Image (cartoon, rainbow, N blue to C red):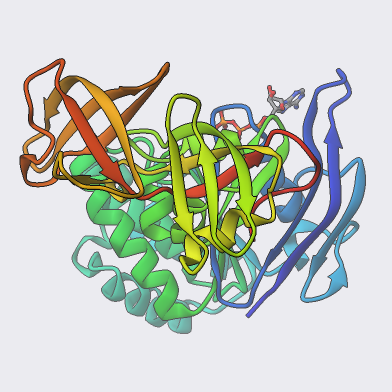
Length: 367
Ligand code: ATP
C-alpha cells in the first residue's frame, strides 16, 4: 500500500517551540504503527507533517520512497480520522461517507454502491439515512472510519479517534478498528496517549517524549525490553522495577550483580549471565517486571533476592506485594500468595530482568 519514512525530521514552530526533534521512523507496508506519548510530546505534529498539513522545519518525509515534503495533501493518498470525527451535521450518514467520492467526481450510482459496501462492512448499513446527531458515539466513529476507507487510501492517519468514547466502547472499537485496518492491509499511523490502546492495537509502537523518539518496537519489545528509563517507567502498570547494580565477571565461573546489600551470582552457563557480562566493572540499572519475579520458598538457595514486605494489594485478578530491597521499593506479582507473609515479613525472589541503562560507560543497552 504505502510506506512512510521520516528522516531527521524536526519541527520548530514560529514561537520557538521544538515540537518534533530529529525524529527517524519507518512505517512498513501494511503496518499498524502507534505513536504513543503524553500530551504535548509531538505526536499530532508528526501526523500532521505526514499528512502535509504542516511543513517540517528540516528533514525529509518519504512516501513510498519518494520525497513528499512538497507534495500537497490531496496527492498523498492519505485518509485522516480525528478525535471529534468531524462529520458534517447537516448530511446523512450515507452522504458523509460518500463525500470524498463526490469531491473526486464519482457518479451517484457507483458512489451509492461503494458507500453501501463500506457501510455494511462496518455494520452501519441500516443507518445510512440518519443524520450524525441521531447516532451513538460508536456509530459516529464508524461513519468517520467509513469516510476514511471509502476512497481506498494507501495510508490511514488516526489522531486519538477513540478518546471521546466511554471505556467499554473504546475497548470494543479498538479491536474493531485494528481488525478492519488489517483486513484492508492499509498502512496506519495511529496517535494515542493511552498505552492499553497502543499495546493492544499496534504492530509496532513508537514512544515519544518532548519531541524526541524514545523507543520503537513491537508491544512485547517495548514492554519487556524498554530502550530508555523513560519508557521503562512510562509503560505498564505496576511500573517496572528499576534496580541499580554493579557487574563483576569472575572469569568463566560466574557473573556477580551487586545490588548494594545483596548480590546475585549467576553461573557462567546461565544465559542471563552472558547478557550482562559485557558490563563488567560498570554500574547498570536492571529493569524487572513485577510478573517476571517469581516468589520462592524461604529456604531457597542460589540466585535469589530478598526483600522486606511492606504491604500487599489485591486487585481481583492478581495480588501485588510491595517490598523494599535495601533502599529500593519494588513490586512483585504475588502468584498463588507465595509472598503473602504478614506485612513486615520477608520475601525471596528469583530472576532478574533486562538492562535498561548503563550508568557508566557509553552506548545504549538494548540488544
Ligand atoms: P496531545 O496529545 O495533547 O494532542 P501531542 O503529543 O499530539 O499532544 P502536539 O500537538 O504535536 O502534541 O504538540 C507538540 C508541542 O508543540 C506542544 O508543546 C504544543 O504546545 C506545541 N504546538 C503545537 N502546535 C503549535 C503551534 N501551531 N504553534 C506553537 N506551538 C505548537
